[in-house]
Length: 349
Image (tube, rainbow, N blue to C red; front, side):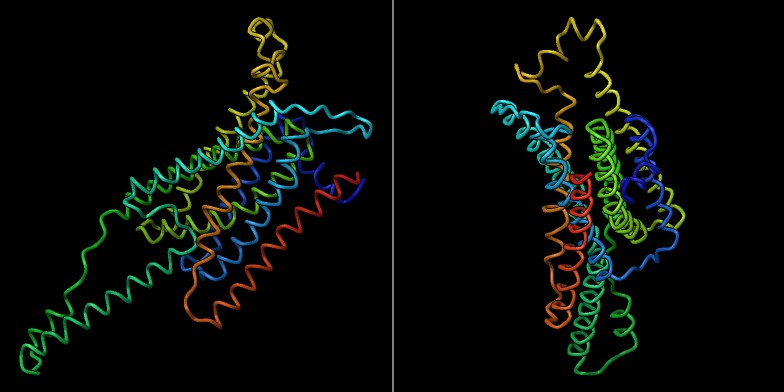
């Protein structure tokens, strides 16, 4: 047994149901515990590098594990015949689109209700810095204008008035924070679905998906933690809020287990309804088989639409941006390489 297989066997020793719950515990508890050691003002460039690594891991899981399994299934016999079914492929493709579309609807809805602030992780600090700089410019402009009106004579009254003048506080920040928590809860719910669907597909797919989600959750939780701190939460309340959203992952796992057990059940009820035998629209796909494509579509949206556009932003400092870009490229390739090694070792086992 290889070292990788031994580690996975140690971490996931039970059946699909037990392993799904264990994986959900791993991805929910440990990243949140790490928040205790994270400073609220974490450097944006460091967070972006960590996010790039997570993107490489997520996309590696999508293209090396989830999509191959969704279209070809899990085969251990080298001489197995693969039957091509175009109708099945269409349904799998629709499942992928459904996952991507679901996250688009959720993301767009959060932005609408939050007044356009969206679900931003890595650039929360940059926005605060820009706002502070803009505030200083406004104060300086008002101060200069007041001096001009007084013929260049600066009075105590005008100076005080210029210093006191401040932009109104954004009353939507608090609402945005709570909407962000709701989005995290929904996001964690889909992570739970992914855990159950992956382990019911096969132990190897489950283990690799757990690894990818785990490394994605670390920068995800750190970014959300920073948003909550900047929205007025204390460090303790922010950590408790993040732990609360982790409940969504366990609910998603339980829901996924229920779906898998129901579709795989041989009870009289399912036989009468012909859900597990006839499949969807005459194919051999059950509803539980579409959770993996749905998960793949969701991961694709998170990585490409939800995260990469933020990584494309620059500070207009060419030297600094060039160094940051190289670190992000390297981190993403390391994340992909990690998933490639795991997939290659599984194929050789």
